[in-house]
Amino acid sequence: MATLLSPFRQTYRYLQRQAHDSPVIFYSCVLGFMGPVMLITVPPVREKLGWKSAERVPTTYPLPRRPRQPIQGYEDE
Image (cartoon, rainbow, N blue to C red; front, side):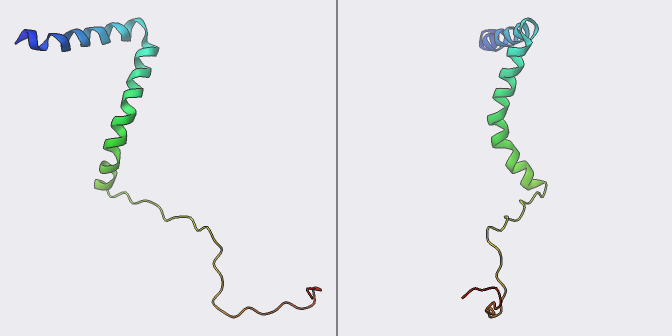
């Protein structure tokens, strides 16, 4: 049984040593691995907590529902 867990134990020791010897590289790798994990886990958690996305921003100006009146007096002829 100890031989099955040996690679994991050695990996843990290596990560401990890297965190102590070069913490910048270690924590940048940790943050890099967290990105894809959060991409998978965050949206379902948001939905369970009741988060709703905002309404889409309108891309056009709403036109009034009445006939347009011609403009006069501004030399638009």
